[in-house]
Image 1 (tube, rainbow, N blue to C red):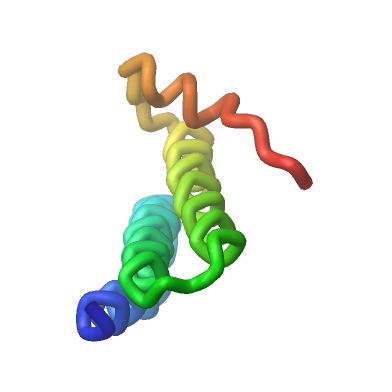
Image 2: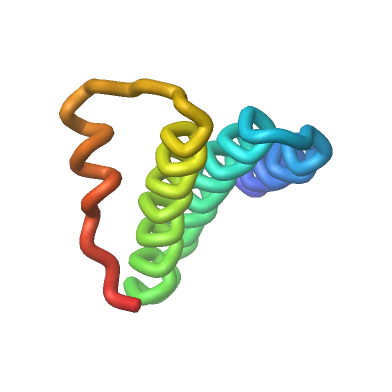
Length: 92
């Protein structure tokens, strides 16, 4: 599982090298994958629930940020789940 987390984090770093909105969308979505992998690892490691919740919240936030970045660039994603992500309530 640690190898999956490391691979996901490596992909995030690689995406950060790509400039422009497509690179930013890939960065956010790969960040969501990395945070989800970290949450899964935490569950398997019997970590505290607050850490798992933090990572899952970060994953959803990253998905939302990727969608927002794509929408700002004119990318159209009309599926209802996209609207849900765009309006997902976060405690700030």
